[in-house]
Length: 113
Image (cartoon, rainbow, N blue to C red; front, side, top):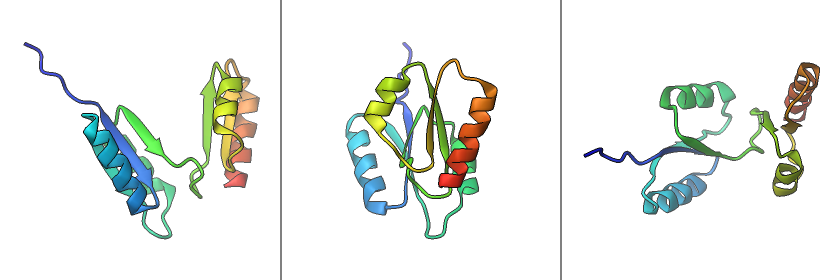
């Protein structure tokens, strides 16, 4: 008999209350949670190392966090834009995308953060 392993979700936020709420809610759903509360004056590098070492199945993260610009790619840009709306430091690219467009999006996201 194969044993089911619950998915692992990283929860990253600057608010301990938010991380706790996310962890509690997801745990009730049978999800394993790896909480990460960002310290005051945090930098992106430790978060990236945490996620790289953890290799979660999914990540719940506040995309409006300072110092962590995000570029999302999707085949459904219109739907994602409608769902997310404008966020400083967040760029949305429709697939297929041009590599120059990607470079510009990364620069814009970094400048906005």
